[in-house]
Length: 123
Image 1 (spheres, rainbow, N blue to C red):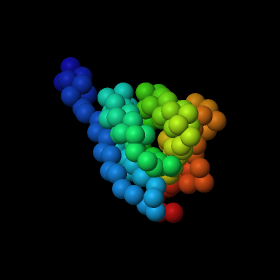
Image 2 (spheres, one colour):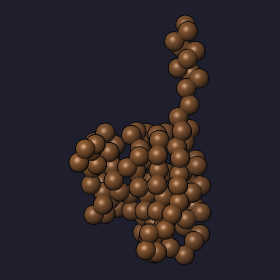
Image 3 (cartoon, helix red, strand yellow):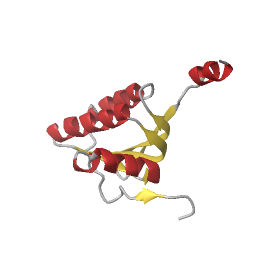
Image 4 (cartoon, one colour):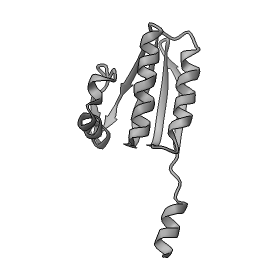
């Protein structure tokens, strides 16, 4: 019973750091992207869409888990950016995230760009 109480009190966090890199807005994500952390990412992407950047990058190098809720946020945002004539690039996937995206077939629905390569520790 104690283990169940501990598990229910765990909280996932997602930190979103914004910076510009040669005119491109980069959203540097750190943590886990799940049901409870998808809304802040969606808000950050909505805000980025209101800004004049032709390209926005979601850098997932600090993300070790993405649930279907997180993947849905990225897919919807990719569609909205495309409809606005803009680009959302998802890049720097850790291996577990890349495998999950592959299993879900997300590569055909997301712009992984040239920087969508898998990152591994020590490389």
